Amino acid sequence: MKSVFIVFNQANTERVEYMLDALNISGFTFFEQVQGRGTNGGEPRRGTHTWPEMNSAVMTVIDDDRVPELLSYVRRLDMRNEEVGVRAFVWNIEQTV
Image 1: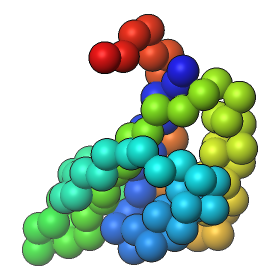
Image 2 (image 1 turned 30 degrees about the horizontal axis):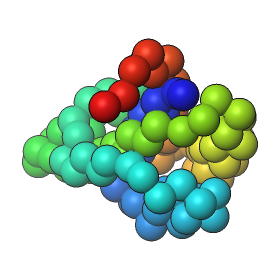
Image 3 (image 1 turned 180 degrees about the vertical axis):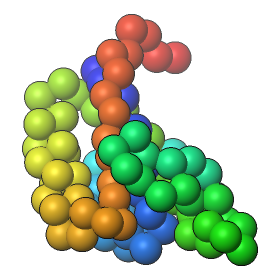
């Protein structure tokens, strides 16, 4: 099992939800109002007057063999509008209860 943590500009919320539905990924945790700045020249997302945009994030735990397809969707979403930005991070899941 793998955990995939996807961080995205809130402008992409509907697209991310559509992506999860299209891949039949029903289990996830959604985080709103995520602040941060990307490492590749990303502008801050702070919800302030100076940096008004905000990010959201979603985390899902899926079988290892499903990860490449999910990352492919994320890559295509990022290429759609690289300035808005979306990133995915993958971790091994050792155990679940």
